[in-house]
Length: 406
Image 1: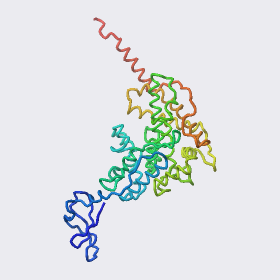
Image 2: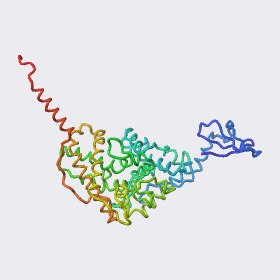
Image 3: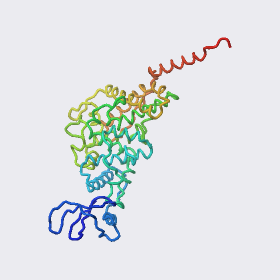
Image 4: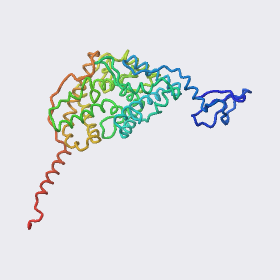
């Protein structure tokens, strides 16, 4: 923030924070346009920082947690207006800053629960960029700003119109941020099954769910894949997660190129306008467009696809991501759980694609599991077979009497 003051015949624009020692003279009484540095003079009574007066004059509207799509748009609009006021005029920068409320920073919602700097690192790698600025500092007009925008956004990771219509805004915004990077959109992360955009959204959710279910099947091979698709939950294939994953691709899309995954900033000037366009105009075709971006062909109002191919491609990605996911979280279970990666990934992919296709024909319905495939038998991996053989060899060696004279 800056503030003009008339001091000793000069007009001064103060810049910087509370410890600033200097100010830039932008106009003097003779109207000359000089640029030089002047030592700050104490002309503010007891206050040493002009911004402290700004604090007392905050006229910002108190923000509120979003409770439906309309209030989400309003909250994001208010946040964008504040960021623009604080000189973040670039939409991409605003996406980045708001993304940091949820992922990839020490002040994020994710970090508040996971306490993982490794997760932060991976989110930024997947996104293809670090967060532009600390939302706690730039989502306010002054130190004592009453808008509380950071707090309201932090409390709004998920938004429900009703119990069956919702969106995960955290997933949505990190998807928008990922789409700004050509690397995040197009380059598969080595050994992880997908691009950064995919890993930040649907592969992260369902590949993680594949890993978790595979681990559960070590003890109970009858647990069904449908269990990782809860309607009212918040993890893996929960309805709100999947809606957020789809929105992460479709919000801000190019209407003329529905197969392309594009940077939303190429089509909109503000985040809130892109959100309004999605909820008002794209919602009923959200999975239609998402499937197009996964590779299905668009012909007018029809989408052309081979279901088995879509399922196979998704299953392969889920299986590939399951290994690094479980390696980080439950490494001691990796060998046994790996026997279930393939069958579980196939079951999960079948449920996922069916859910998307259902909503193409019935867009008023939520994205949720509607089929319940039987659990497939495990498929022993080379890793498991090698570990099993090594264990057998070890047990045999232990039986050898190395000192027959005892």
